[in-house]
Length: 294
Image (cartoon, rainbow, N blue to C red; front, side, top):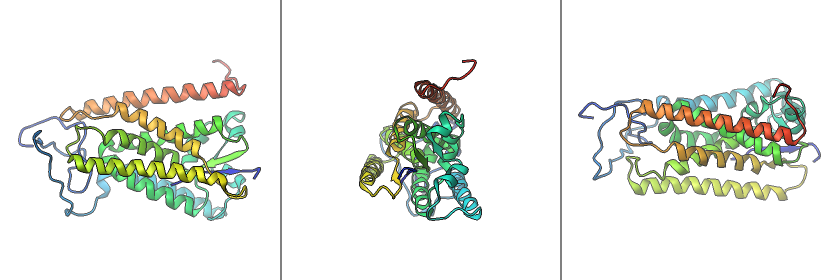
């Protein structure tokens, strides 16, 4: 799972619908009726009940679909599926220091999360997004999944914008994927999830291994020849840290009304958006960019 940086220089009673329901095959979907789960024993997860359906993770499928569609449109427009140029990537919405800061094209912080540098880049990112999304969306809901993708992807781009080589062109969904991993690492530690503790530990350990491995791969890419696009670890780190922060405020309270959880999500995501806007303003000011009227 990579985000590339291309360098030009180189129940039985009625209950409110609960805040959160367990992930996994055989478990009820987030918006289904709540069944009371005894506190003294964990539920049994039926692994043989069949594959996950579209209805269990619609936002994940939509996000994957949008990424794939953008790539197909790029190829149909004449962009190489294996090695697009920096100019082509910028045409389709990738980020670059001067375009964003001095060109005022801040929208690139979002659009670049749907642009990929070649078919392998797209395939690895979408495989990771699909797997983490199927695990995370039943916990977060479709709104939460979409918000996490956009906010953490933007956060990763902001950190990259602030620290990376100003000449580099950056694109990819992996800042958002790392953000989702960060949220899951926090959520899967919650003792309120009605899932056997051993399974939660296993799932959480897998997500942690995923993050560590990909950070290591990103660091290793720094030693590749200058002609090969580098992995943008700053985008990964920015998305991951914001994901961890979001996860702290999104830990569920079992049995609480789901509409309360949605309100809490809205407050948390709005607060994070305000924080990102503040950070963007700070980065721009540091680089001597002014905003008339502010």
